[in-house]
Amino acid sequence: MEKFMNGTNCKTRLPPRLTTPLLLLLSLHSLSLKADATGTNMIDFTQASEHQNWTVTNDDVMGGISTGELIYLNNMSRFRGELSLENNGGFSSVKRSIESPDHGIDSAELIFVGDGHTYQLRFTTSKDGNRVQYKHDFDTIKGQQLNKTFHFNDFQAVFRGRLLSDAPELKAQDIKQIGFLIADKQPSPFELDLIQLHFKTSQPIPSPEAN
Image (cartoon, rainbow, N blue to C red; front, top):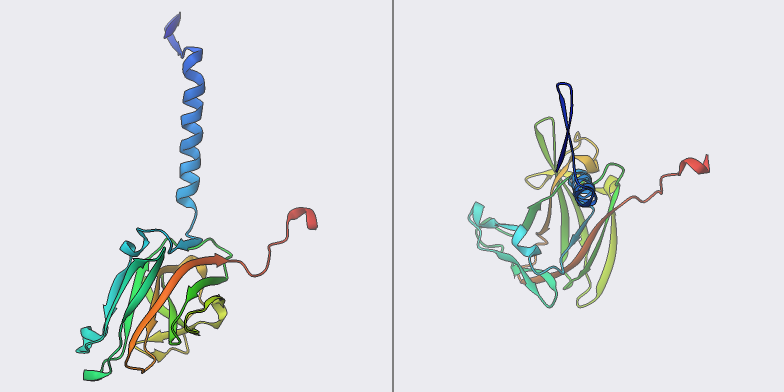
């Protein structure tokens, strides 16, 4: 490393061989900061570790005896268990926290294989200290892989199973949690194979050149 003295000023110049690696590190750091600022736009359930991000909440919190879990099986994440209506029970759910999707996202596409039961895709939002849950029911066909798109304006706000009429509109930037729930009043085993969930914009944003 060379130093140059000019009066009271001392300047240090990096050798040329260090300049390129330094610029590369700075570029990678910049990309890392951009990635950290980007919201969650896809959940890949085919990843072996994805199920570890999820937690289970069953009706045993209210005295019920339904069971449920999310496991990794056959390159997918399987939400499985057994629903029971005993002791006023009847639901099983899994959920995980996420980074809020990018601003402008207005829908989600889910790829899954079902068992004939009806499930719910659920989002939990947090804004100004208020948490609200939103649900969207979806049917399944046993053994058949389906792609379903859920538009945010079709979700219903709920609180302990009751619909809320005065809840704010569901916005991507407010979503903090995603979940799946089964509560279709059919006491039986269930299994839902999850493959991928993509957050999407249903209407393309016009480019400046189009104006």
